[in-house]
Image (cartoon, rainbow, N blue to C red; front, side, top):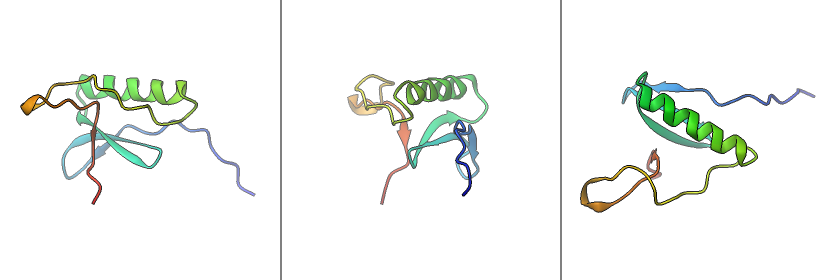
Length: 81
């Protein structure tokens, strides 16, 4: 029987959009432009929350960057169709 790894999800580049991306719990989180410091900081924050939560997805909050129209979003996620 194979051993399961306790690996940390990787910081990757989404080729089509050139965005940084990490997959947690089967969901893709877009972090911003790949290679920039803000996307790396966002990755570090998400991984820290994920590990602190026992490798569970962080609970959504209403804090985060403001978007046009007064909406807020914690982390950009790929829309599900």
